[in-house]
Image (cartoon, rainbow, N blue to C red; front, side, top):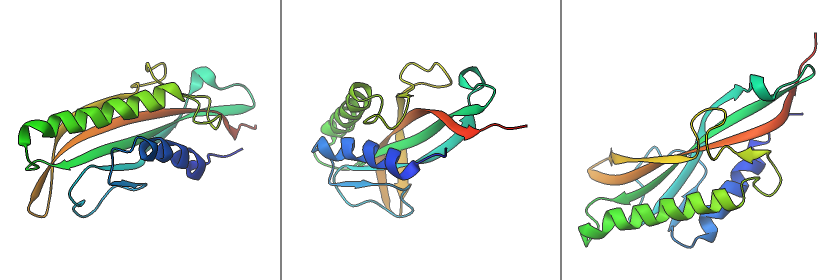
Length: 152
């Protein structure tokens, strides 16, 4: 038993790629400016045991991923920037909701927040170099049964 981030992330990223909305889909938090067009990045935010789902011999875990949609804020027409970012978030949330077991690799995406914040997105801005990006940061909480063995 162990967490398999490579598999979970591959499934989550494949959903983003299948939407056909993004010019780039990456499995890490960008440290430099994304190019023009929509970019989606996915990385680990935190890992915690879930007492209510754990037993006497195994521990279940909540693996929380951050997903972030980026689009340069000066993309023309500027009135369509929020539309594009919101459309991308809508597509991602729909994809994660409709395959909430990520191909059977996890127990479920914690859609409604049974064990912490549920699937959701917050909008804002980020600045890289001389470019301001309109961003939406998704919380993608994954529930993994029997992640670790518990022994006396």
